Image (cartoon, rainbow, N blue to C red; front, side, top):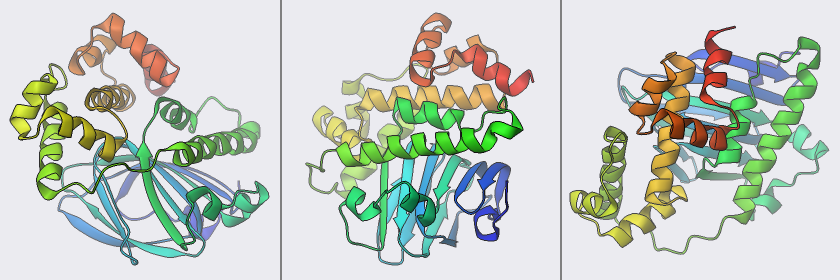
Length: 294
């Protein structure tokens, strides 16, 4: 592994960081961004492709050209820049941002014959996107930091996983249908945010769609359309993703018993094991063992 100053510089306020970098081409990083007060940071980024899995937390990013991305549920933030660029990132106090980052240099992209303007359908120097954190993408992200790989094989392993992860994300960008709805109104956004808060707080026993609509002031159709527009998923598709991402975090950071995790996120232990394996490709016990029994 060879260090590169611009790629391996860990931003302040980022904690519990694990990192792998290969020459000046590939950077992988996992960490937690945690602040005690609401904060806006102006952060500089290198040209190339940046893919950030937001496992949990909240961030609002804005480019100098006015592009904005708001993420407050499991998602992948994608930034593709032909030049170095600056983003203003706003973080919420008391809401730690758990993330996995993959950064690919322009040289690496050129070697793979990946033309970002063609992928994003834009002639802009910087394109910002976000996509729902689908099952295959999340499973691949969970394998990016595999501590069982021998040191001599890590360059091969991480290069392969980086390529797989980037391909899955870009494939979703390419195949995603164009937004079919007009921009959400402030009232609709407020109602959707309230719905997300309710589902987070009550994931163990969530309300039905009709009850959720009554509590948010939106009808069932607008709730469903709004979730698809904001997250690319149905209301309960989003809830299931939230449950499973919460379970993953509990298993990997808290070491909770599997049955306790299952009940916390609204599943029986048997059902939890089935949906977890379908989602991540591993049973809960394997994930917990990797992080607490090495």
